[in-house]
Image 1 (cartoon, rainbow, N blue to C red):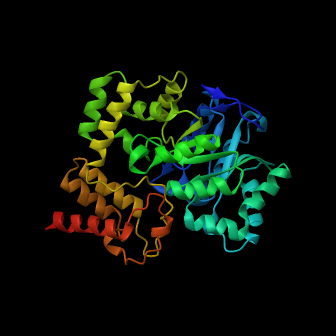
Image 2: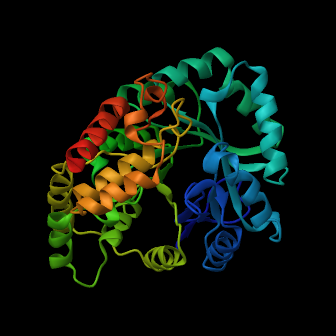
Length: 376
């Protein structure tokens, strides 16, 4: 496993990090982690050289931190690096900072965090960070020894990112970077901002929530023709891992097969050539021309007041757009019961929660219209 030394860390940071928001679950229920399968994945990750484990307060409906505390309990604390995040959007008062932080220490069975982030910052949430002095809180915890490195994850424009990095001193930052979002969501500009400030970058969503494992017939044909020996996922991982200033690349690995492929990739990361990068531009263009919802299934919108399974609806729609059959879509729709897109009342609660900036009610209306059309 490729690694890099980093300040205040007991072990080198593995180039591949384990993202713990897509652990295997039972019966498709996000809050029911399949502990047997998930433990096997964590154990193999450690054995394979992964040292960086990333979780968050609301991953798996709040169960990820609890599970990770259990899963890593048998390992010496100085053998792995632990990252979690302060859910700024869920804070009702400055006093909640201490309450949440103490709860996280307890759930993760640790005395300190190697990496601690202010979670999913955008313009609105950064204003809340300032109002609640959330940065001052985590800086104090760092000074007291409860945090080794402080940073933030981010979902907004380059202008907002510039404001965030200019306001405070950061040890690292976490950005959504992949070959599709390099231009589509201005990831290149954001990466450049971190480079100019000399802030190490952690990459999230290198495979765009798994979407780049199945980028569409045209994009896949381009990549497989160029390198029949490489999977389409390999292209996404090599793009992310080969960028300058990258500390680690997080991958939310759900299966042992995904884990093994990723460990192999990051044990000897093959750089992309100039021609390879031009080919990825063509693949990204082909990907973006499809009529798909750019959902990464992060689950931040999951607590819909009307009970709609928003990520599930978008996944069902996208599968149909990728060439799925009518009966498969309709049977899938029926399986959601009352959690379907036509239950959306357009309340807008989900809108500020979506890191991708998806107009969720409008997109759900599109899914519902497809169901109606296929049912006629």
